[in-house]
View: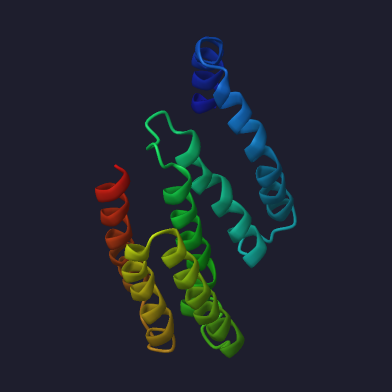
Amino acid sequence: MVFTAAALTLGPPLLLAAPWPALAAAAAAPFLAVNVLHARRNRERALANGLVAVVPARGMLLVAPRAPAGGLAPALACLLSSAGTVPYVKTMIRERNSEAYRRGSVAYRAAALAAAALLDPWLAAPFALRLARAAVLPGRGLRVPVVGAVEVGCSLPLLGFLTGVYG
């Protein structure tokens, strides 16, 4: 309620000054609708719901006021990376006994590595780290906080690269 009140109070003057964020919000609306539909069906943890949530979150790199000049490449790199996190985390927690999820997670990471290397050859290093993690860690019985800490740790090389090159 507090956030809604603040948005209704501060939003209109901001939109009058710079209306382009309204276009970004409109582009995110279909993704939000899918997330709401999954929530109404009590399927918030569905793979498709997680993947759909990643797209507008990473698309913010394209619309953020301080987006780098090469906004598309960093946004695609983040989207590739974050989309792979969804099935990987499932292999570590809810689907930890599913060999299909594990194979799918590793296959996605291999494809993402190839795609990232096409964006920029230097991206191969952080994406190779994510591929190794997806191949080695499932089935090791790691606790949820450790899974999260490893995920954050694997995000730092990508963040460092994108900040150094585009930031």
